[in-house]
Length: 193
Image 1 (spheres, rainbow, N blue to C red):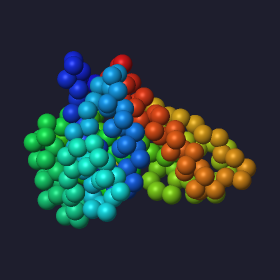
Image 2: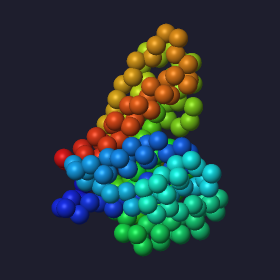
Image 3: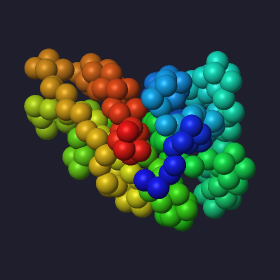
């Protein structure tokens, strides 16, 4: 990726819709010495997202945007990102699909984490689908975002073994632990560190 990481950390926005546990692990990572990024902005489409509490806790700017009118809100979003000199976007449990136009403007600079081993189980209810299909493994994937759902170039994946008596909840928990580990690793890989 053609982003320089001198001592200046790359200004990053994290997009969330829920609890923000991946956001928390990215913030922790951003504070470590080896991190090429700094988390400067938290964006949520959900005003009740628990993850927004981290904005206050870590003194990070936050914006809540109602993304019902896509064009209007995405233009506003682009303006906010530009104003905050954001260079890279990390989607972390962000439940809205960004438009092609938006993705084009940030081409190659939007990362997402998905709770399955892509290309299997794109979209929602990944754990349920993996269990219903009696898969032996599931896991998580960090990938670049392109205009097709969960189809961008894969950066890093981590496999998780599915136990005999696995439930959606237990599998989700198991995979989440790995998500928190591979998102920072994927960022290091993107910056060739």
